[in-house]
Image (cartoon, rainbow, N blue to C red; front, side):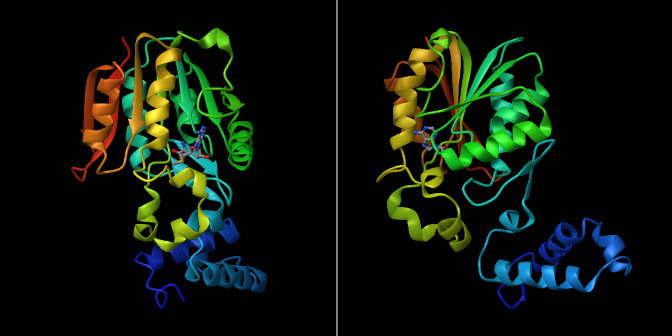
Length: 266
Ligand SMILES: C[S@@+](CC[C@H](N)C(=O)[O-])C[C@H]1O[C@@H](n2cnc3c(N)ncnc32)[C@H](O)[C@@H]1O
């Protein structure tokens, strides 16, 4: 079914669906142990839905992110491998016992990874979508990690006590331009939340607002670290400089595409 739907990694995806249904490793299942008629029906149903375009991770309910296994489903963005690099850069800017805020946390991926990898840090996360916030709360509970989750636009929900005291603001914001809707794969376009993907006519709406807002919250010398679209390196670097950030850099991913911008608040 997945082959017929032209799924690039059909065999691997089929094994993941089997593992998700049976709870057993693919090797165990292939050896013929413990698969019931009901399991087969459930796997075929998931394969049908995958072939019809539902994202794999919404069907398995699981997404790996750095060392974490996160729960995901409709209503939240599926964490991407490139965002693992964003965490690396943000944590490199975080001083010992520092304060870090993940803006637009979705499933909680960045904030929860920061809390796990840097138990010395104080980790906050914000999210505007109530549906996404539910997934972040679920993941925080399952993983037992200390992240303060707040609901609100950008940094609005945070306590005023944090103003001027945040060492790192990190974000993988929505950055797709509304005109590029048709460039997205259909499983993304039709299933992941609109507000997680799109940010106005040039895709920069949220980044521009965040660059302005973060300046009010960062400590002098603190860092704003952003994931960006592959064509947004120049524009985001200019925006950060225009807002008074210093030491602005754009980093490339393993494929050589600019995917991260950072700048230091004066
Ligand atoms: C691209 S997703 C990233 C989710 C998660 N950080 C990750 O990397 O997997 C962007 C997230 O930002 C949230 N968001 C969009 N606009 C926002 C705003 N103005 N304030 C707070 N969160 C926002 C979306 O709901 C979505 O969860």
